[in-house]
Length: 166
Image (cartoon, rainbow, N blue to C red; front, side):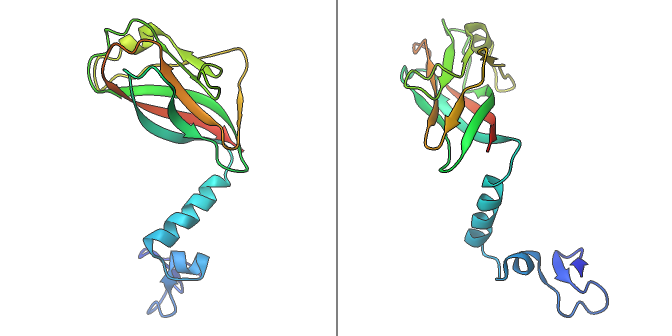
């Protein structure tokens, strides 16, 4: 038994009699979008390794913590990178950077310096992030957030969070 080129699992030779869709062969029931999404979510939440944990659009003119990612129940998380990208416009007017963290002040994981944010002048730009001396472990239910130190420039930034979930 094997997967056929038509996405069916079973006897791939001859008439294909007895072949079933791959999802049904694995899960034991016909696929629908909701069932497929549940299985994918479960499988992805049980994996190890560095992955894209979240991709959120944040406002640059908000001076309070904005949510980037919430650690799932029963898991821990080490954030490896936060990548601000795709600004809604020219952010060269920003006078200071941003901080990211699990704590109330969103400043215990990493900082993004002013020059990195103010260089975001087009949709094709992205900025690196600077980590402290140690990695902070986020625990189940903790919220990773970002705070822009200068809330005078109105705009949005798509922000990707990469990390190790275990």
